[in-house]
Image (tube, one colour):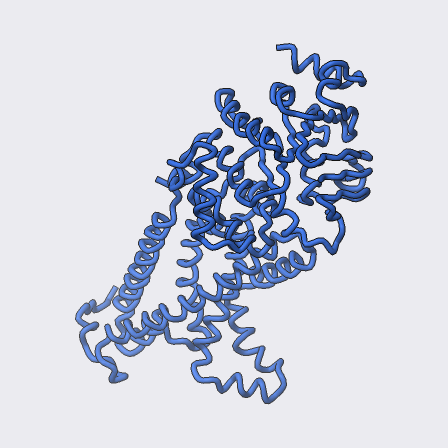
Length: 243
Length: 243
């Protein structure tokens, strides 16, 4: 293979005039972090609501939960992003569609919401599993004390359910970060996107993607470490993972 | 205090768990409900505070109709204490917080007042020193005493016990029964599902014997232990009192 390795490329100025090639990649990393965190917040909030709905006795609630989960988890993420980005503005009334297309930073918001909703289906199913794994008597005891359904979830069921599903939630957070790379298909220049532009400008494809790989690994390592601290922080003495 | 009139309940379309059950518990009375497994005793007691819905008949609690859709169930339930077979303490809350949660969220007591009340009750069940521990750090008997204290913290007008000693090791049964005997002697209205015939003999005013969803016998304690009228109650007693 005739390939000229050049690891010094990172310290050379990029043609965008925004500093070095390393700066280029780091600016991509910042976008990846921003879009992933926002997507994760959306996934966590809407996924929690839907997960709770799926455990309520009400038929309507579980029907809504069922539709939400099956809609967002049965379509490839790529197709979903295309739907939100290219199809949705065409389906709306002309003026609304135009407004949507002209929003500043549209790829960023579309990616955050698209990835967030895609991940929310997974969070919902896990939270549902966490809630149903609790003994039925917990809900009964809380109800018998006079707590309302909302209070029962807020003070009794959810604090335990979230503790139980914390390890799989960590995986979902990591998946959110990795899935954010799909956003280059709708024009978001995040870490993968910047690695590609570096390759195109400098022809140093292996260096560019090696650096991107390392940056993804580091980012996910930070998340894993933080989540492990969180797990330890909320552990209950004497209970399952508690120490 | 508790009126149960011609109550019928089905699980699913065909399985009838309660068949035309009628009985009552007067103020200050201690009624023990016994019978073989699957006879509907636990179901009956859970219908009293509407943890389980009924399909026929009426239940009235201190003049309030339990199965009336207009009844404020959380409020009604907060006035009746309930103790479960598996304790059902909230594992993520310290013992004292288990006692304070419903006082604050349901009765609206100030935290300081709830703490005072909670500590007083913990002292009463002999667990003051464990206030800061988590449920998983206590033995079964201790947990059940906490559960009784948690129910008492709501100043209930009556107490329901659903097999409070069935999940306990033999040596822990007496510490829980002692608390219950004290409570009965103080004049608490109690409905107790239990196999502890010694307890029934000591403090019960009446004994109800259930079999296959029916109240087979509802008699004064002396009559029940002396000469039960029904064959089934006689057989049950002869088996249970053999040892």
